[in-house]
Length: 279
Image (cartoon, rainbow, N blue to C red; front, side, top):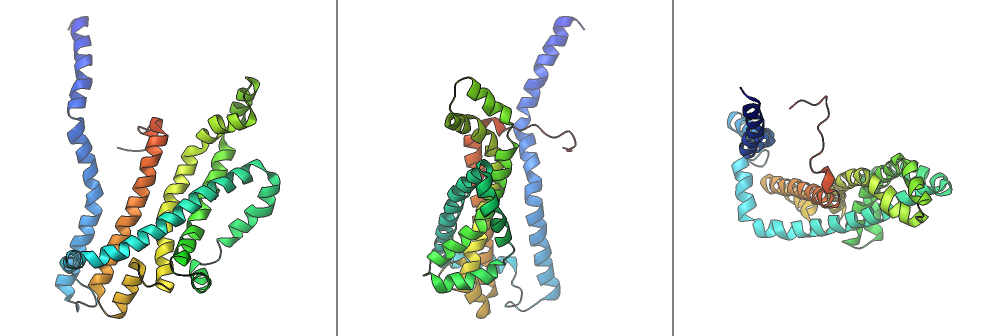
């Protein structure tokens, strides 16, 4: 084969790979659905084989029927949970980043506050939620518990991210005439954003968990309240439906933070695959 022919073949190969890229990408997403489908199949098989009473273990079809028939009621309670988790997460993200900056930038703040912040995470949330429900009104209590749970991951990952930035980068900017604030905003903080977003993804899911736990303790609406109320009435299918919605809300919060990361850090959309990772 001539040199020209070899060049033509080399040029055509990427095109062929690109043409088949969409089907291959869809094929890679198929395993994502494998686990839930296997779980539903095992659940349905257990119902067929054991034949438990419906209040003990409803079938997936029964839960799906409840999701559709009571969609208005479920959406009413879901709105409360979404609002509580969103406000709690927003507070945790803002205050967590500010505290992370303070801890990473000041030894006094680190020695004064950081150890107590770590020690506070040893207290179970179920021990805090009843007290918060007594002190605050409905809504504020759920937001506060969501904030308390979501706050810690943002601070820890933020501190680690800020400390991991090479200080030589900021020093180089300073030698070129940049102020300390400019170097922090344009050099240090952008370099720490990947770690911050990792913490925010965890925090977003934890905020949903915190709001739900607080609804179990004391509330008059929300998916946690609906699940507890339904279980007490042996309406297990409705409780399963509420749990399914909570899982979807958690996934939506996680995906929203991931979308924000893709917008803020477009260069990380196609991250290099580690050499030890298989296809």
